[in-house]
Image (spheres, rainbow, N blue to C red):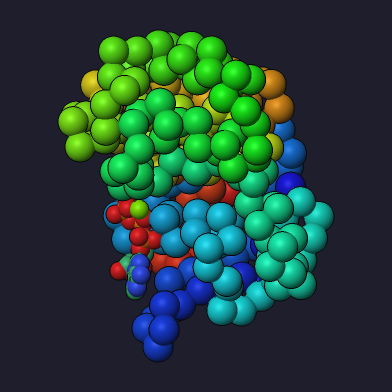
Length: 219
Ligand SMILES: Nc1ncnc2c1ncn2[C@@H]1O[C@H](COP(=O)(O)OP(=O)(O)OP(=O)(O)O)[C@@H](O)[C@H]1O
Ligand SMILES: [Mg+2]
């Protein structure tokens, strides 16, 4: 699903944030992405989301060299990727329901086809009562749950999640992790950045550990 060969990344003329990364991620796997604050987790996820290009090296996703993708191919690939941003990025002018339904709208699905699925997922993440309000009225944890629901609603092939449970209590954090595990069982490949040690202990998935610009893969 993902293959990195000597991938490096720097922002502008700044230092190399990621250096000579070599790793692979198999389809259907679940990896935690760990490393101290500033180690490059979000930057690595930006590469995987195709929102940044590596400064050096070669990256393959879904069997294709990302450097050779046309704009249209890149957009098509992007539709198979779900993302939970660290800072949520909900659209302010849409309701919770509309935010979560967005990936399906983009795919051209009619509301009659997805309404009950979106409602069911929102109930499941505890946002049934907040479906018709705008994000500004949601708490941090509620925004986070809406962002997770939006990322998983279209059952993406690859799910990237940047500290997706950083703003909820431990009990909800574990429930949400179970949602990701369930999605993974249905075939979604998952890379989840987290600092939460109890989560790493409880769910024993392999780790991509970033430090000093490099990556260590531990089973
Ligand atoms: N847009 C940017 N322009 C310049 N430098 C950046 C940019 N985004 C991140 N960086 C730098 O890249 C390095 C890695 O940042 P990144 O956000 O990827 O780390 P992180 O592991 O996600 O940290 P955190 O755990 O705090 O979210 C940091 O030194 C940061 O200052
Ligand atoms: Mg980050």
